[in-house]
Image (cartoon, rainbow, N blue to C red; front, side, top):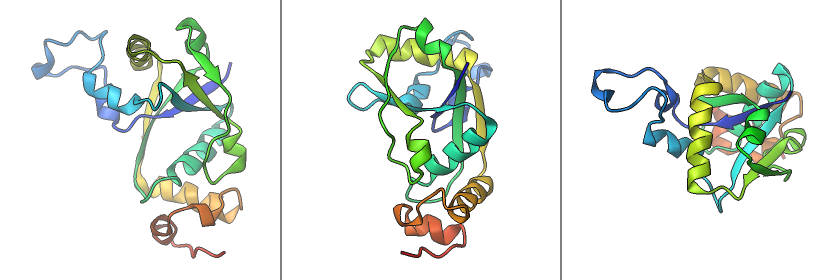
Length: 170
């Protein structure tokens, strides 16, 4: 069974633990703010298929290299069977990262209604593994990607290239 990767913006929104100010929120429900981490565009949600741990690191590097600046990354890993269980349709569409191999792992969740997105979010909260990778670790993965020629440095912001200590050579 493949795993799927989705960046989620803020791992704190996905924490199942409730503090004393959240007595109104059942542990089986989702904080509304978490929906920001799965915001759609044209009723689609971008995710990546990752079958091995090396694929996860490579996907993180490629995804983070799309940003304007180097920063931490919060992400969810979940089983692809979740999409079938929720009857979510997918389209295999090449991604737009600076890593052409990772682009081939990209899929869009399509025709997402508001209620389907909420059901997906609740399922993520209860079944996904959430992880935060610190800025320094993200920088190391991007550096490795550039040095191994998996990431095209001409498609990475000059600020990130500078922050990871490499020169953007055309």
